[in-house]
Length: 245
Image 1 (cartoon, one colour):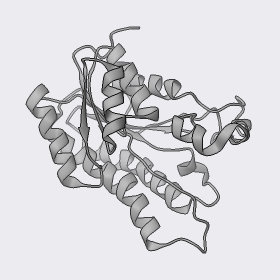
Image 2 (cartoon, helix red, strand yellow; image 1 turned 90 degrees about the vertical axis):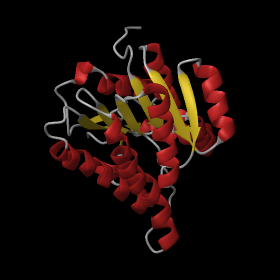
Image 3 (cartoon, helix red, strand yellow; image 1 turned 30 degrees about the vertical axis):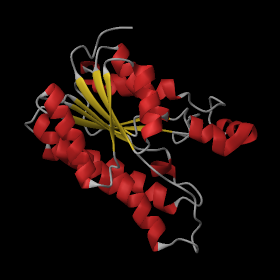
Image 4 (tube, rainbow, N blue to C red; image 1 turned 60 degrees about the horizontal axis):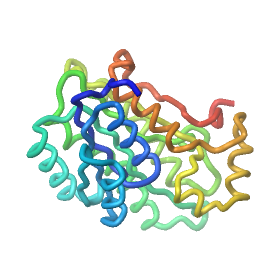
């Protein structure tokens, strides 16, 4: 493993499980010090135990601004500055048109849009030139997904945040890009889909399988590193071709 992230400090929201945890592992292997942020203490404890001494956990929700303040206070206290923000926390559940509720919209957008906005905005005072912001999008933000009105719309919004922020961050040396996975075999997805469901989702891609979270984490490390130094406002699809055909 190379040392592209040596000495860097990273924050990963939704970092205790799935794509976030896979990215945290990869970042640490490449030399970073990582703060994982999530809502479940048991998952955070398990993540830090597995990730080792260069990981810290902070409990909280991206939709709670006071929780985000605590996160960045912890980063500032221990590390002083911040190089990488992976705004990865997200939520989504299906509700077909005709059954959508106000609460469903609020829950989805509070995490995926409001949460992403404030995760990034509150990080900026700790960041400087060379900083990298990575937002987790989704193939659903490009293609739409039946029954996923709120989720798909929220991820389309995330895609636009990177375009807008690349303009807002002109002159700062901070880059912002979107990493858009397709169906990924996280623990949660495996549990929800079962063996047959996983096969069905995999069959929708030219590669005929779901992604391993490790594959998404590898691309996050690329976007976090100086290997992607001339990329901003971009979307990198890591979806097995799902949204590309």
